[in-house]
Length: 337
Image (cartoon, rainbow, N blue to C red):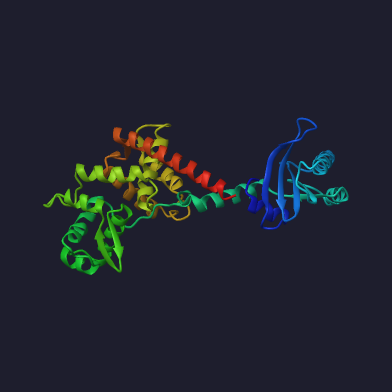
């Protein structure tokens, strides 16, 4: 119950509620007060239980309150009316009335609501928790090279790129969208420009009939980009998700069946609702599997999937980045409370 906003709402306290102490040890013995808060000019004694009401807890909280009053009288605790709260998961109306007679507010709460609220607050500062991959209809990373080459020639508008390459405007739009997802291009006022990494990528292009196939230098550029920030975009996250899906499945059987990979990818990527249709799930898996194969992280032999040595190193590095970002997000979330 460390989220003070949710706690204040549950206890109907003012928005200025502040934590004074958690697990405050009392002088009388080994007992500890779960939470001591300030709210306006009042102090709030909060005992938190994860089971239903038990009458002996009233004696406990009254004892705690009396000791706090003694501390106030001795000048060891700030003055203010002490409000007593006992939070339980279940209580009868008679229990609530009995607690009221003792000057204790008996509050019924659900632990699942507390955890859901904590998750929502964490997701606000850690957006990757709700990030999901999107399929833009580009089945190979090499396909974006033609549009990027036109950008390097100074052509910056989608329609002009379409005319030069013979691609449809929608295809150019999708290719540039994927390029943006990898940090290769930026958009301003409906014009597109290569970023520094995009310029490096284009300089490494095979400017011949193999333009739609990415080479070792381009693979290295993209792999380093994904490894540095696996949550940069939905497409980058999709690559991370499908490699992680294969990695998790490999613990049960290896090589990995394509059908098993589809189902795991649907779960790992958070797209159970969006990819309910077999066609959409199959297409999305095909797209991101191809991306992972383009980057030499996964391999496909018939209906079986294997993880390359580079893929094993890659997923371990990405999991490290994920853990670091989670820890930083938790620290940020705690500092906001």
